[in-house]
Structures are given as C-alpha cells and as structure tokens.
Image (cartoon, rainbow, N blue to C red; front, side, top):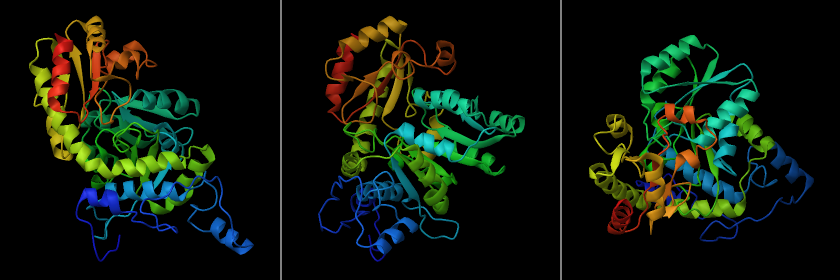
Length: 407
C-alpha cells in the first residue's frame, strides 16, 4: 500500500497490505504451485541467488504465495508502532509448515550448546517437550520459573548466567496465565538478552508484543490467524531485518520447515476477517465465562476477562480484549469432565483452537498427554481441566449446549 494513503485500521491492513501485486493482475494472490522457478538467463539466476529476495528461486526458500501471508502478518504485528527513529516499524516474517517448525527455527537460530532459555509454567505441551527433549539433547538447558513473579525472573537470570533467551507465552495454554511482557522485557534487555513472545492466543489484533521491545513474535497460524481450521502453519516475525534475512532464514531453509502454497493461500484469505472474528470470539467468550463462573457444577474458571483471575490487571494492560480461550474445572474431576464433554451436542470435541466453531478439549489426555502428571499438576493442568476455544456461533446456542451438558 502506498505511503501516500496510509491505512488506519487493522481490517484494512489485513486486506490490503499485499495489495494485488502479482504479474497476472489477479484480485487475490494466486497459488504458486511450483517447486522451482525458471531463469531467463544465467545472469538472471546469478542475481536471484545473490540477492536478498529468494521468493523466486525454489519453494523451500520462498514463494510469492508465502510472501503475501508473511507481509500481511508482519504488517499486523507492526501496525501503529514506531522504531527508535520514530519511523513506522519494519518487520520480517518467515512462514513455516507448522508452529513447531517456526518455534524450532526461533530456538536453533539463536541458541547453541551450553546456552539456556528461560521460560515459565503452563506452556503449550509441544513447546514444553521441544524445550525439555529436543533442546536438551542439543545441550541447551530450559529454566522454568513462575515469570509472573518478577523477583523469580531476576533470581533465575542471576543464578544462570548462561541464559541467552527469555521466551514468553501469554496468554498461556491452557491455564490462561498472563505474563507482563513490558516488565519482563525490561529486565531481560538490561542484560542484553533475546526476548521472544508466543502471540498465538492473542493475535496481533489483541496484543502487539513488539510495542514493548521484544525481538521475536511467534504464531501457530493454524489457530486464529487462519481461523477456519483448514491448514497447519506457523510464522516467525523478527525485528532485526538483516538477521531475519540471513542467519534466521538460513536455519529455516536448512531445517526444511517451509510452508506450501495452498496452505499459505488459505492463511492469507483467512486473516482478512481477523478483526471481525476476534470481536465476536471475545464477546462470546466473555458471556460464556461469566455464565460458567456462576454455575454450581463449576469449581473454577480461568479467563482473564473475569476479575477473579489473578492476571486480570496484566491482561487489561497489554491486551485489547481478554481473548477467546478459557479453561475450567468441573466439580467431580476427571469423571465429571469426561461426562460433560460426552454430553455436548453442538460444541465440537477436538484439540486445537481458534476456529470459527467452539472447540472443547481435555488437556490431560490430549495436548499435554506427553507431559508427566506431576509436571502437569504443578503447572495447574489438572486431570479434570477442560479447555474451551469459544467460537462465533450465536451465543444462545453455545450457552444452551453448555447448560444441557452440565445438567
């Protein structure tokens, strides 16, 4: 989009960042279903190999359909933000085949054997296992503390001088804990550490971590950015443009975690309705949380839109709205939780989240199955915990389904 016509709204950015820039003048970015690209001359090939733009060489390296999604999501994360010179913030994004692939690129391009990464309790199960199994096998140590307590962050950084990166997931999966991005980043940057944020649950519509000086933002695009559950994907967005185009890009292509043109196309289309979807998701979630908190069958509701949540104020500080994912504990534990899930008629029994329909899962037997029970319990992921990603259905139908299942 031309600088002469700056876009002032998130939906406009989502729809028009990439514009209609393609050789075929197509309204929508085409699906460039090709593994490789041709060169007019040997010199043309040399220039493309030597240049910074690798989108028209080989689709493991880049692809115009990937670029459409990458530029749009980078623009959403940078929307309204300025760099240190007061100019519009510029970011670089790399689209991956999955969130796990993007997370792997993030860690391995920034850490080496002997380094440590500091993170917190109640992480997505895949992230937890990546840290404790894959990174550990390469000699990278994972230090886990309650990062909501800033004193514990300071203590960990003092105790482990080999910490090179601080990784935050907020809101966290599935207990919906929130970490103060600004406060933790300030502590980390005083020691010149790298800071990354998993922004999957919030999306750039609800939360912009780059506002607080972080280095990287990560998303599982499978979730709210795609919004329809049609494709797996992950994206890594970085502030250091040169590093993203060189070192990080090199790790990305050598690890082989590239996306594919069809999934990138679905993502680029899905993200166009992000603002509309998130407004409805969040409005429904607030009503569901308030209903569940008062229900006699519910022991506890984890949702930062409720004043009873310990991280209510942190969420309100850094998020536009509290989000659309919650978890709750049924009185009666595991048996009650299983019975409740089995009774649902409209809400969908499935893992994942962020689709337009309401998804309900049981973390202990699904997303966190690979985490030892004692670890799960320590992180607040109890046997009877239910996670719910509230969809955009009519709210009365969601509430009626919950009521009959709880009955």
